[in-house]
Amino acid sequence: MRVRLLDIAHARSGDKGDTANVGLIALRPEWYDILARHVTTQRVAEHFIGMIDGGVERFELPNLRALNFLLHGALDGGGTLSLKTDAQGKVYSTALLRMTIDVPDGEGKSLGLPPAP
Amino acid sequence: VKSIVTVAAGQGFWGDSLDAPRQQVENGPTDYLMLDYLAEVTMSILQKQKERDPNLGYARDFIGAIESVLPAITDRGVRVIANAGGVNPAACARSVLAAAANRGASGRLRIGVVTGDDLLPRLDELVQAGEKFANMDTGEPLTTVRERVLSANAYIGSRPIVEALAGGANVVVTGRSTDTALTMAPLRYEFGWTDDEWDCLAAGIVAGHIIECGAQCSGGNCLFDWQHIPDLANVGYPLVQASPDGSFVVTKHPGTGGRVSVPSVTEQLVYEMGDPRSYITPDVVADFTTIQLQQDGANRVRVSGIRGRPPTEFLKVSIAYRAGFKAVGTLVYAWPEAMAKAELADRVLRERLDRLGLRFDHILTEFVGVSATHGALSGGAADVPEVQLRIGVRAEDRAAVERFTREIAPLVLNGPPSVTGFAGGRPKVEEIVAYWPALVSKKVIRTNVEIMT
Image (tube, rainbow over all chains, first blue to last red; front, side, top):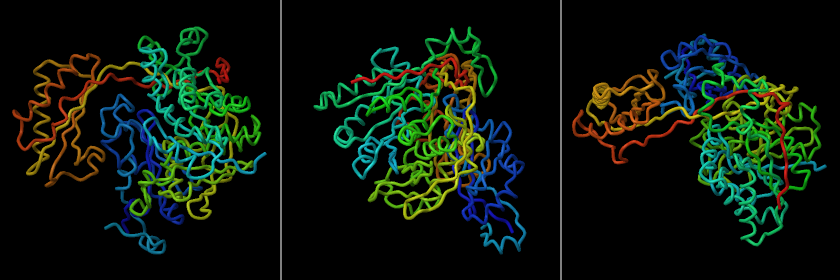
């Protein structure tokens, strides 16, 4: 079953210099494990190919049912140096929500995951 | 010791709602009003203002904010804590005192002025004493930009604010305090938390992080269920109601719009987050993986369980330096084939800049409406009704950037068709003031508190 992050998570992002952060938060507590298993550092780095120059770091916050990603080299230099519309990475969060993941059908159904449209 | 201390946030950055401070003291009870005015680059803007006029260099909106809450301070004992002092906290305090006197409140304010964060006058002396100020992101030495430095400020913690409150200040004005210290300090002062009560100090920092961006934790900019967040026009700014053990409730005044919920608070907790196990502040290192949130009735979120550990031997320093010039120009291209027209205009413009022999450190083209924020993920421009072409340039040479700004408007008549949206006129050339994050040893920083009346 293919699932879109937009349908199982919400998110907010911000900046530190040329790094954008994306906090990805499960819409239901029981969906956190799905995020933790499927939204890997590797997958996120592949998702953002062409948009970021540096690496990706991932941190887990099971207490908040959230993952935090640092996207390095994401902001065209960042801060006042950046020429980007989104110089402070405010909406990088929404770009991550476009990602889809493949979850085994049985597990997806038992957790009530909405299939991608 | 009070059993509950309330801190209300009335400003999330310089430029936030002018009415929020007054609403925070009028729509319900609070003990403290916390106003955060400083972003990373704000200090350098203020430094430029101070160079032009030695009586400036602070957040001038703060004077109006104090005027709007004056009765709450003088008659109801609400105390105000703000980092509005910028690079000139004493001048800020003098202006506040003059404004209060004009409103018949002479002698009613005791302003605690916190200084010691400004390292600009000491920069070379500190370098000679062995402080490196290497760029935390790139490792480059300060000598790379030393001649172009405009301001240098250490992020200072809660102690001098606590000292000012203990000295009887009903208004505390700081320069570059950490945003979170503005909330943690009054809790520490009221509850008598000592230097090594790491969990309580960390809880105060987390409380500060949640409310330092104003309404961004109470329904503003909240993606979760945004379609149904009620009455954003009358959004309530957040309050923290803290207990002596460090647990606290995030809420807002009754009768206001917005929403305080576990999702709205969680979104703010992850905002600008780095390593969640190590949220480093001058007073304590807070561990965000220990935070427990629980909905505690409508628009109330209980926060508990927070653990902290001792801080590092360093303070972060925010250095601002001149880094050349930039300008951004835009034009809008309409259907049919809006994207193809915008792409052609971009090629034409770049070729003209080349023929003029202009050299830029960087040129960036974006297609707003197609790919500016989501890049290739957005899936193309098939049949879009319009595209905004947005081109930015950056260079050390002001003249090159200036010449670029003259090349946008001509495209309206001598470039691809169906173009509009140029009524704003020629783009403005901006001097870039860039940010240089560094560290400094705590032992060389001396803060000072003066009470002005």
